[in-house]
Image 1: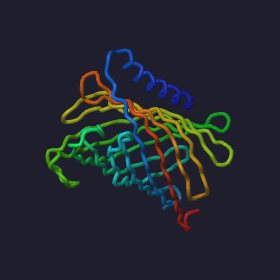
Image 2: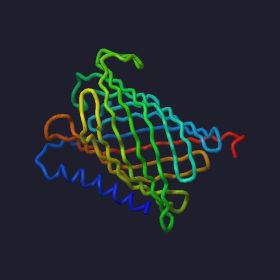
Image 3: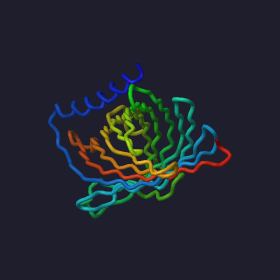
Image 4: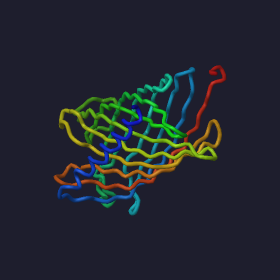
Length: 249
């Protein structure tokens, strides 16, 4: 029964994009690449500290898109369940158009909570079903300091992801999935479709500590203008280094 939810969530995301295709709208196609580094430290038998940084840039022409200064998170794994809580520090370039020279940077503070369920299937594959909730605080243009709550725009967003993973020979793994983002409420917006991501990629585990992910993301998101959407093709590269304390078995 559990694996069926993965198919249902994947179809839900596809239909959310198809629903927009049934209407007349304008798309802005962009090429983007993400470069990320992650660090996982196994602190206890079930508890793990996670830290990550990431640079997201436009391609052709080159330009800044987003920068993740830090993702600080704690993950607790219990059998097939993973619970996580963390805090992201983001910087976004406004407007999201590399052709515009007169741009500015907006800071975002994003605490979040998430829960993920691993569902085994027949063979070497399994599903990772995740539900994540974020409270996003956007700072105004003139505010350059984190943790200074002045004239903030607040948005509560929920994310539902279905990711299918298949183990391959040579310590490779193939992943394919979908993640739907919905704005639930905020002080300047209500319930709304925020974006949808279709993703696929490969992970190579070189040893117990080092792994590399190479993947593709299709990002479909409203621009904020009526009947206008971003259509982004993204190359994602992320390296992860894992540390396990000797006292942890």
